[in-house]
Amino acid sequence: MVFLEVVSPGPKTTKKTSKHKVYPYLLKGLTIDRPNQVWCTDITYTPMPKGHIYLVAIMDWYSRKVLSWRISNTLTADFCVSALKDAIRKYNIPEIFNTDQGSQFTSDEFIKTLKNTRKTKISMDGKGCWVNNVFIEKLWRSLKYEEVYLNAYESINEAKQRISKYFNNYNTFRPHVAMGEIR
Image (cartoon, rainbow, N blue to C red; front, side):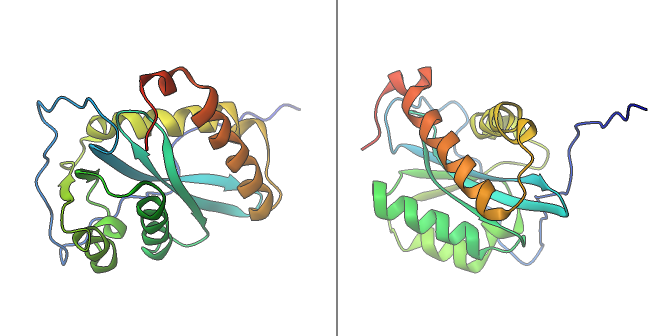
C-alpha cells in the first residue's frame, strides 16, 4: 500500500501581538545596491519525527548571504535575538532591518537589540505581504526542497549539522554570491 503525504505549510510561525509597536515598510522603491544596506529575517519550521523545530535566519538582501541562523524547539523570541546579535557581532550593523510583524520580531528584546545599534532603521512588512521578504522566502523553499525534505532528521543535533552544511554551501557556491561579498 502506498501512502501519499502532502507537502504544505505547517505551524503558523507569524503570530502578531497587539501589544507591540509595528514599524512602517521602508523598502518600497528603494534600490538595494550594497552589502549591509538591508538585512531581513524570517522563521520557518522543519519537520521532525515527533513534531517540528523552528529555524530563524538573518540574511543580507544584496548578497543573499545567510549571516546567522538558529534552531529552537519553541517559538519564542530568544533564539531570534541570539541570531540577530550573532549577525551584528560578525557583520556590524545594517542600515535597514526588515521583517514581518511576528511577535518574535516585535518583541521588546528584539527591538531593543536593533535600537541599541543607534543607526539601524526598522522596517516591517504589512499583513499578508510575504513578497516583501521574497529573498528569505526563496531561501526557505531552496532549503526545504534541496535538503530538509530529502533527509529525515532523527535529532535536533543532526538537523543543525546538515543545515549548517547546507548554509555554508549556499553562501559559498550559489550564483547570488557573485553579486558581492558582505563584509
